[in-house]
Image (cartoon, rainbow over all chains, first blue to last red; front, side):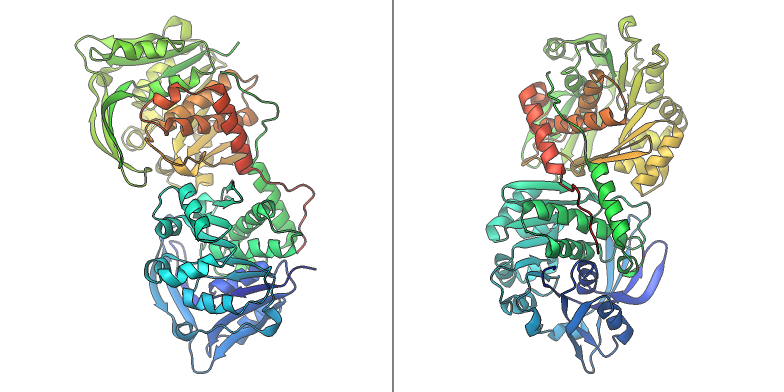
Length: 313
Length: 313
């Protein structure tokens, strides 16, 4: 049986514009992507978030029909769901935020259902660090594995409380720019060392189309992004990466550097599916065959033979 | 015995400024870096370039003492050696060119010594494509393996002659920005496909600190950059990458996708040594032990176990 898995984070509606296409209002939010990916592995996946009156019942049903427990999703009467709007540039790797309406997120106080307080794997998505702390404080399993995301805004303006949160998690997964802001180091190997000193045993630094790096237990793993012919919508790539990663760990026998390496590959492959369609469409439909095929391809893409090959110069 | 290897390209003096240090005039140039790296593998390495009166005899001796044949280095009486001056930004990954004095390079007409016309591995460094063509036209070995570098300036202003040159080589090694300029494709996989159609069977796309990708024979290989704690001077990284790569191929039994994969790793490791010191200092001193150690570490950094691991969702 897979481990009990909890996801805490935002649910949202997104308006997204790319050089090729535009959508006005589709299901989004970090927790949505994380839960959709991680629920593929765990039949005991709980979701804690907040939504408004405007959140479609069909969108909740989309999640619960996949086995996600949405008891921890609070619907605020008279409130509006968090809304984000952004435009991707030609390189599909950078974006401009056009509008952020926090709405019900402004007074979000996560309530973890009793059933999920002892979850063994916990993903805390990008949120105000004060809210992240409220969630962490409700956890009761001393052996849980906690995975944290954050972003530059919190690092720049809420550093003290963020440091407290970071100190209490097992793994932090942030992008390269954020790692540099958090530590003041341009060198990612140096940045990772500093973050270890802040608390997390494992550090993942995401580099978008350039892949991701894992640091921990004195070891390093560097993986490329799974190459995609045509990126359609990068939204949710990082979150489905975290979701695939956490989901894999929820069904792994042990959580250690080697299984987190594998989890990072699984997460990368989930991210590769996500960016091939707008919103959650592609991630919803991920099947085991396609996943296994891409993981095998990932190995082929990155491995080289060097048996008994000692160079003399 | 290793294959006969020829390097055609620039020799220069460089003035380099980084956020941490500054040098006024040190030995540089693409061919210098390429030859220094590739000569580690081949005892039959010829260098074709051009220098002025001001080029120090001790710098020529530095190369010949390492077994590089410099008969093809033309010294122009009354001429001045190519001079480049640049400043690296805080990220050590982008740079601004301060000054470029072509000097003797302006009328460079490469003369390949008779002994090296039938070279089996040939590296044509970044040069005016007309000059590259002059060099290629002198080659006599129908089974040679030719490796080409170029840059955005030639792609934008000398496209016709560059296309002719590209059509005639086996491998092109350019950076991601250049691949996009050359093909108009943001997607590197699509860009690589277009470049194949232009001629080269193998395409390497360099991504600086993000590694490199190899495309060819319907296969792809993606490698990270070898991680370095502190980059001291990125100058020559791409050229020593090409040099290490070509050097390895000069001693490989066969040249095919698998050995080019290995060669790409060797090139990446050479580049990692190069950036750890100013100019050619680090690459000069590369020893077999350190090289083998980094290659083994490279495998550890990039490999993950996935034996008999089929996921069910």
